[in-house]
Each structure stands twice: as structure tokens, then as C-alpha cells.
Image 1 (cartoon, helix red, strand yellow):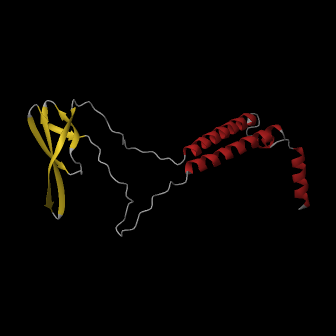
Image 2 (cartoon, rainbow, N blue to C red; image 1 turned 180 degrees about the vertical axis):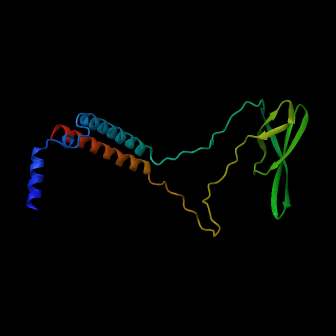
Image 3 (cartoon, rainbow, N blue to C red; image 1 turned 60 degrees about the vertical axis):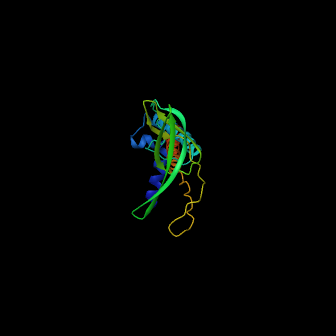
Length: 187
């Protein structure tokens, strides 16, 4: 056993670095160390930017309205009658919109949105029968309730796993790069 310790001590006292003993990267270990350290620093910078962004996910749907020029003109319509129909056990409410254009009155039945009086619409000058509501319906923000009548809690943002992974990977790269440089230049 003492022979193994003396052999190990002799080998360690003679070696200047691990590169000379392994034969791998004995000439370019410094370049490899610099590259690893630089990539580690870059990864740490990006992880700081991801941390600042907070939790994120990719959303593949476009929720922005697509505005197309339709040639429709703004106008005002009046809410007329209201009616309700029962179909398959469900009640559907509708409201009548009355729109006057060049002395003629046009009407359209739409789902009842709870609007009263005058309603902002846009109509097609070539066919005034074609019009739609542009008024926004005001709604109250009521808490969501499940089937049992209990209030549903809002989901919290998940932890930012990308930041944690980038931080750990950046630290590992930086440590490896510094290890290679230390072993190449200082041993």
C-alpha cells in the first residue's frame, strides 16, 4: 500500500498539468478553456435577461384583431323590440335593430346584448341590409365559479424553469472553462 502512495506522490510532483499526461488538448487546452468560459458568461447574461422577462410561454394563436378595409360606413341604429325563444329547453333572447338609410328602414334581429337606445353600427352602402354592431358591451368582472358554486382560484405563474436551466448551464460552462485555464496555465 505504501508503494502506491509513493508512486502517486512521485507522479503528482512531476506533472505540471493534466493536459501533458492525457495527451488530449495538450496544445489547445487554453483555447478550449477560453471558449467554454466565454460561452458560460454569455449564458449567464442570457439567463439574467430571461429572469427579467419572468415566466413565458410561446403562444401560437393570434388574438389581435385583423382589420380589413370592408367599405362599411359608420351609422346609428335604434334598439326596437325584444323577443325570447325556447329551443330544446334553453331560452334565447334577441333584440331588433332598426336602421334608417335614405328614407328606408332596415331591421335585423341579433342576440340580445343588453344594449339600450342608440347603438353604433357599420353598414354596407351597396346593401344597407348588411350591418353589424360596433358598440362594446360593458360587463362586470365577476369571479369565476365552478359547478359546486365555489370560487375558482386564479392560476399562479409557473416557476421560470428556463432561467434556472440557463443559470446552471452557464455556471457549469464557466467553471469548466476556468478549470481548463487554471490547469493549462497555473499548474
